[in-house]
Length: 424
Length: 141
Image (cartoon, rainbow over all chains, first blue to last red; front, side):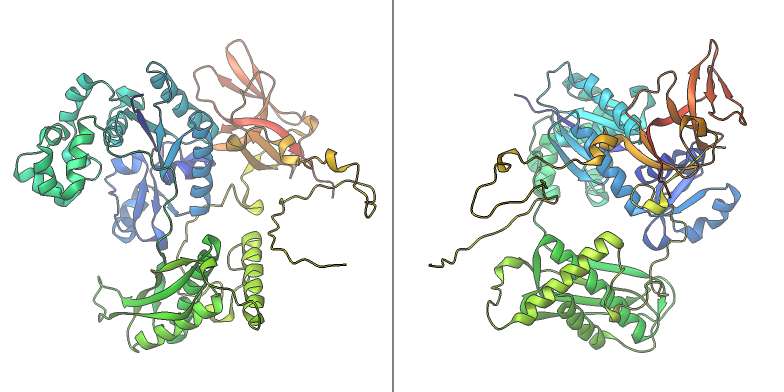
């Protein structure tokens, strides 16, 4: 059985999510800002046409936003996550094996379908996601993942393909690969593209024609693999298993600069709380913890950046223990007189929580605490994040917390934020 | 009497089956073989999870169709908006709930309340149907 990969990719996913319950946004320039309302991370076609680039900081385009009446949204991850799950369910209604690659992309195993079924299936799939969830997509089909990504790129850029590009035929590939810039090939970053340009490799076709050994010498083993994949020889199978979690990081920029230790301690305590919560959810425990903080690198504030790590006496996912150690490390890093812009906590060594021998006799306290944290997790899961928090994490609306001034309602996950239908 | 210590792991289903009647001690219950999964209301209300959305009604233009102000609508985007269906549809950039009726050269969006006028959408005009209303859930307060 020959392998056939599909990749389906949601168009301007975050913007499309914002439009599902807001028909008035159709045809309007719309952008979605990154965490903390920093820069544009998703743009509608109309916003792209106005010249707004990916990653443009909001303050730089403020005048344009006002002049052109661009609709601005803060990231609404509750909504995007919920709609992403619906897209996955819709895909699974037609294709039994898929690999969720990111929040807005999935690889599909199309090898189980007959050669002639594949393209109609792809079109029906696209149509179904559009109708069921309200999200427009493009789909690429090819014998390898890398080629499927190229096909998807072509489908996206050229309207004549009506959203589906099929690169299974080698003639079609020969025709089209020469029109795709090499830096649009999956896995070819700016650095590799620059190296390739020096030896005259400018398009995907040039790269496919490159000697794989040369490619490996230039861009390590992945480079060689990319050449084979572009030639139609599959080296990257579908990854159906979730990779085991290697680490957990909770790091965020502040909504406003932090200048007091009290605020910094609150931030560290609340990030440590989140990290412990995540560990319990994935049933892992920390051996080691790393805490860092720094000021803004990009304005003219005096610069300070520092980090420190420590080991737990016994691996743990106990909120109290994680918070206590994180705060102690933070205290060592703290210097008065700076305007801090960010802090973070990283747990780099995780063990399954079951590895720790639970103390059977004597250490009843630990067992009770575990039960308390689990009860807290349950309350927070049902009543909303941060409903119950430890005192050290500070108030729910502290000044250092993230800015999300333009967040839309969480239309699909909150009873009190459901979309309203006018009936008058 | 002897006691034996055994290791065991209890994994409970999230919903426990319930059957009426007392369970006599020491005698196997005759109902045990007939335990069934309890009824789940979402099974009745939602045919297609990925395509079903909940929305809240503002207004009384559909009151004669049994859709009252504040009701919860179960809207299915996978269902076909056939003639006579009640649908959520975009009118002037806003979602509204109406009954869809095909005319000879247009589509009518009919209210179910004599105080309101039908809306006429000519063939060729953009008509964006969000989904078909499957249920209106009315809570008695």
